[in-house]
Length: 213
Image (cartoon, rainbow, N blue to C red; front, side, top):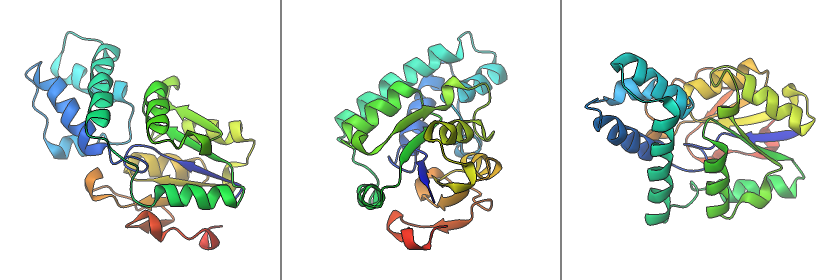
């Protein structure tokens, strides 16, 4: 392992239930009702891709960016009002990786300004060399593009990268990029198929650096 790359939603912050709630509220204003089964299939994708899906399906009179901006405004407000903290074990893992001199990055489908907001709010921005958003790419997760871009920024061969993911789309992206993938079975991320991951953990503290390639 020469680099460790984190997904963000559902890995660093237990945000999937919040995204679920906020996206449903945004769509409900357009009289669109979303069930959990349909929503779980979209976890790991960019917000603009998620909203594009619903806009096309229900012929909504908005752009994906308009709905994403609305969503992210409410999302940030929720984090501050509820004083959310990183998922248990994340800060300890970051400390261990830093002490081992392993360069770290975040590769998330969230917009860059949201990634920056979360790492600063959680006071963990000091750990990461790069923050990479899938919003800047033509092909988001499950395509491997975001992970290949992140490895390039880190000047590390993809095969020497370890990824921490909680979603089916994210684990597919990591493996198709040629990386070692740890699947985090976060119950709040829905019933995700993590079968492509190399190992599956139930809590962050289960990650042992000495057992990684």
